[in-house]
Image (cartoon, rainbow, N blue to C red; front, side, top):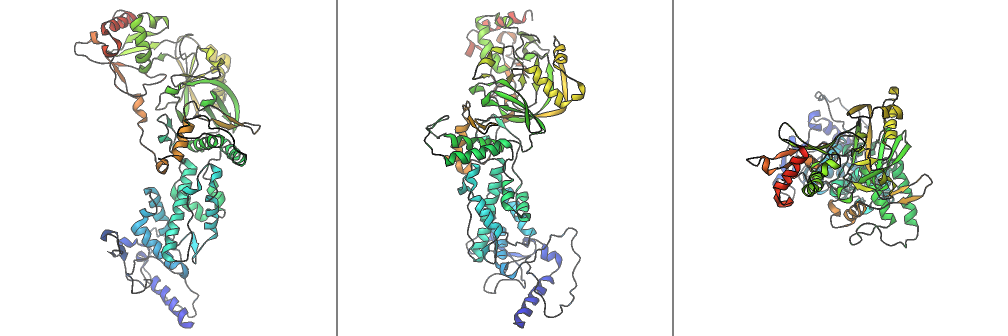
Length: 591
């Protein structure tokens, strides 16, 4: 017995006798590589003779591992050490029983981490995390799963309550074999990181659903996930904190539990039934997914636009203080989902007609009737650079009404008043080119200004007194977040689940990605050129140029051309280009 204790003490002494720099240096900097069987030469494990090396029959791997010191039975001699580096890594003392798993874990991380962790940011976080803890396992000890691992496994097996699929987060077993337990360590770490990413930012990347969606990133950093779990005394609570904490999400989670426990006899409804069944439970899941896309902090004062409800609400301190009807984009000109900041209001706005409307709606009218623009209050002018401008001056007939609410965004949409008040009497109000028309704009303006700058005393009367023929801008001293959402399932204040029509088909698109052939990559974002819609659309007036020079149709209002393509106004679409040109000449007057 004494020999065994003394041998362990000498092993610990041999490890601590290494210079501090050698103990903490990554293995790739201090040794030569010896390939593992079946691996290419360049993937071989680093080798360094060490008192902690494996038995002579196997190649010795470079290691920074240290066993925990054994209580000595004899006085340990004083050993001189070199000066520690300026920012040394903390060294975790390993129990002898876990040393074998730690060595295998270090080898796996050094040589084949990509086999376990696919995403590069996750791999970098995993390597840094385990190196910092001297490759000590977090999920096993002495060949068995730790209570922390058991709690994590139990949680991941029940994530269906959050609208997620437990099969996406497999929970491995720990067998007591060093190789197998090192692999299980990394597999469980991968499952935890995948869950945290899905819970915090979505099982489905919104980029795969539509080009008309753009939210700020939500995913929690993998290094933060691992650090929080390592320090947590309640891993279930820590894992639960990664999902949205919004009241709307929590209410849907409770409704999902009720729905799944109830007998199901409802038919498929809403969405593309050929590809996905959208029953009530699935509808709830799709809406929970969209909650994950939203910012975690909506703002103390903020605006929520609910597109399928055709409604807008103003919130303060977590409570809705006002609500009004709105008109939203047609299905083929969808109002984009986004989170931006309301920065200023425009009183008596000028409407600069976007080129998509000019090309698709007004040019055909002008071809048939040269007086069409004048009758609807539009004017045509030439800018100094020869570009063409179609606009509507401020006034009662202006398409934007008397107030425009501006939250700059890549989609070039905003909220505004409208002279077409009759639209608000309809139940279905997907009627615009993408912008949001507000039923009670004066009251909306008063509320926004009272939240932003109550000291300025803006009232309905004061706002109305600013109406006239000149544009006026009111900057918000305290900008207010605006979140455009898509809620086809909500729980009201009485606890009742309410459902709405999927006017843009987003429920079906999300569920198809969650269940279809693209499921494996549904959470991987794809590139979207969100700024393409802001590219100018060029217009050619054939009789105005000897060289076919194109004129720029200026736009900065309502809705930009969705495709951003360069389209000429020529006789390929509008017949006799001379007639079209004469129409514009008549509208403009004398050029």
